[in-house]
Length: 485
Ligand SMILES: Cc1ncc(COP(=O)(O)O)c(C=O)c1O
Image (tube, rainbow, N blue to C red; front, side):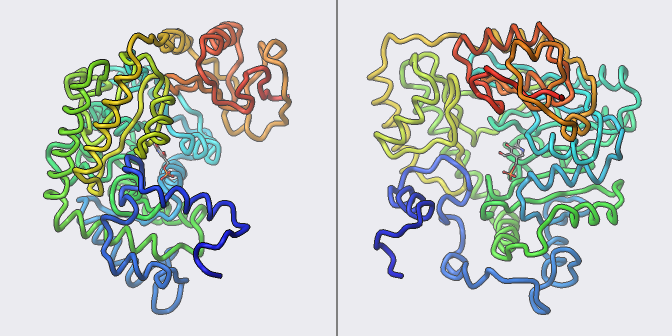
């Protein structure tokens, strides 16, 4: 098989076409096509793809290199224990919930949690008590929960065993994680943190506060999203309060018995890189991100989420990871989705995602000054071509949805395993939802499995759909919905 003959291998060929375009990479993984990985690693990555052998160690019961690498990870992040994950933060969130909760336990959870959190809740059989996050109206993004909200929830739900929050959101905003950690200690609650997008926080003082630095009990990080890990590389950090035997047992429940050793080796290298030169590398990344921010914000019609948008101490938006460059498209009158398409198609610049009125560029230690020049130049040209257009305010309807308190009828686990039926949305009124229904913006579920589909929720969902909000659900047209039969 030679390299470039046409093959009947559609996925492989599709990926090669993408790679061969050499786009300016503003997406994850953080190594940006291997730029941040040592040459030896890049050249020998297939040789590193090994199995559990006497000389390579075993992820499920490590005694040699994996164990030593995990101990170095714990020392690097200043935590009691660290575990390598080969199933991304998805595996970490599920393991964190399985390790800390039992069937029937209540857990306070930020409503815009990642789907892996729902997966963990279903697997444990826990009862979620949802906390609605704040919403940033101009960029139409969901933020975090405030310390005051958390305190009220602890008073209202004294039986809740744990709290799970994001630090940061996909967009780089963080809540007051220090105040939240203090509240958890004061009320005797476990703090579980989805820090999928924050494995670099610990290594630079100008990045937001890391949850592991304020004593969270479990912290999940995607090494692959931001640092030099290969895709699926992630880490679960745990504090001394957790039963480590149980954590290991839960990890064995969900991790492969054939972990990819190249992934694990990349976690080891990413840790070494951060410990030895992380400060300098992140200095440079922050500087480049600030240059990008300044260059973009100088373009008429373009807004960029900046530290000036923060809401301050105690709020759901206390700090901003400036390496996340969130471009607001409202002033251009085009959607973030259209912007993402144009940047890719016409300029070879690839953002991570495009939403209703924002496009997210993820900058890491793998980005270069040339990438920033390509992004800013492209944006200048796009902006010149879209004068005088207007975007509707889609977040208003979604905010109305947030004001409706969900009526929880059964646990997500019961709803997940119950017989289900697909009904027209009209016929579904009053029934129990069997799926997650999320309007974008702002990406906060309006319905979760086990919740009553009330007339009020239906009316608001129909209104936002009619206004042009995409709905993430089994039927994106929202003509039908899955209900418990
Ligand atoms: C906030 C958050 N948590 C968890 C995950 C899951 O991470 P992974 O893709 O590493 O499994 C994601 C993925 O995008 C995420 O955005």
